[in-house]
Image 1 (tube, rainbow, N blue to C red):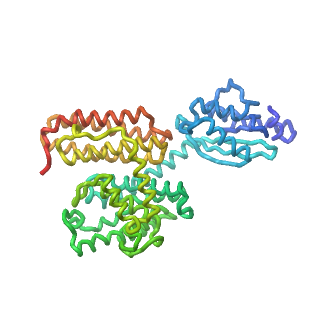
Image 2 (cartoon, helix red, strand yellow):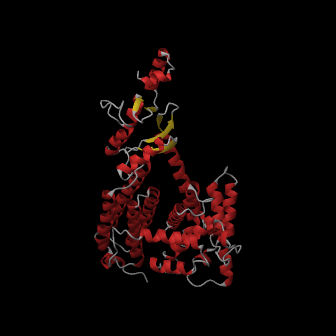
Image 3 (cartoon, rainbow, N blue to C red):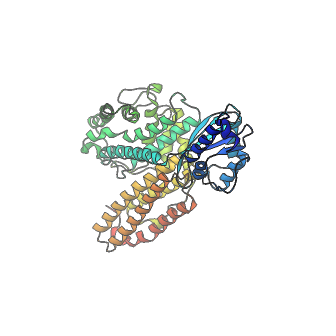
Amino acid sequence: MNDDMAALGDGNPVMADGLAEVLQTVGQGYLWLDDTLRVSGHNRAYLDLLGLDATRPLIGRPYRDVLRQMFDSGEFPGSGDATAFIAQSMLSMRCREPHRLQRARPGGTVLSVSAAPLPSGGYVLTYLDITRESRAIEDVRRNAKAMVVAMANFSEHRDTDTGVHVLRVSRLAGQTARLLQRRGLFPAIVDDAFIDHVSTASILHDVGKIATPDRILLKAGPLTAEERASIELHAAAGAQMLSQAGLMMVDSRYLQLGAEIALTHHEWFDGGGYPNGLAGDDIPLGGRICALADVFDALTSRRPYKAPWSTERALAQIRQQIGSQFDPAVADAFLAVIEEREKVSLVQWSQAMSVGNLHIDEQHRILIDTINQLASAESQNDRPVIAMIVDELVSYAAFHFHFEEKLIEDAGYPEVENHRRIHQGFVTWVTELREDFAYRHRSQLGERILGFLRDWLREHILGEDQYYRPYIGRPQ
């Protein structure tokens, strides 16, 4: 029994011995630091939860040295420079600040860690394994997102051939909101909860299109005034649907925000939008953010009435509309998000990759762009964005492979089953990657995984996909 155990027993050796026995048998880890921030005590669970070697004594060692030992063993992946990380960790203790956090160990165990100053001048740190609870929360979050995406795709699938439009809009909305937070803009609105909610809620921005007739939604030519008025009804229709759904759930912030975004994402900053002609700050921030994400993705995607625009052309169009259609502060953050992601390129499209079919070539370009954006998020160590892009990659790969397989099957390509097996293998692999990333709480994917994605895609397009080229040609 060490001195701190005795102190906790208030001088009563029987009580101290009993307390020491209890602390050594509980599953929660404890670590005591004295007023010089040296280790003065710990229990067995602390060593087990942190994977520390029981044969290397900790008592009397500076906590800084313990942190360095754990850092060097890979305990804090993605934490940057060791010296800066340790200095920041020690600063809060020197200032005698309590703190609480959750972090994932390299093997995927999730720990809840809290540190509190002691009246004697030292600190006590507690560690609790919350892996099971964390997984349950992740399951609930992902199931909720899957339901939201399914709801959105009922309305979206008719006017886009990707099925992933809503996921891309969700990611762009979240990234824009995060950058607004980093810039200190709209501090009364933009916090971590808002960023999470606006990402999910923006998925539902066009859910009201489910009430728009196909003859209007799929029309290839210009709309008449009557048709335009009909399609504009989707904003109010979507808001009503989501508001009604929100009444069935207690304090469903993402449905409330979803209704708000559905109603206002076609309003213009100068008051020239619809359905209510709102202007400036009267347009909720979620609507102003989603407006940019939606317009950009619509411009750069194929629609029944238009071919996809290049990123450069779409950005030029958005810049022209700043101050009229778009909020200048939000647009500036959005443009910065797009420009930053364009800086990293793992794979570049070349004419040699063409298979002679306009739709397949466009889909291959989107897959290439998705992997490049994944590499960009990796370079920025942006775990939430990495997770969203992996979701997009899973969804888009499944869509593209189904489209491609049907096309070559209808064209009479004899190796369609082998092609299908290759596709299924990739979808299985990338799905397992997503599960591993989500549940083992990896901070990054790593160069090996990004290299595999790059090489598989490039070699598949330049290899297996070229074999069916003579069978498909260009659609008329």
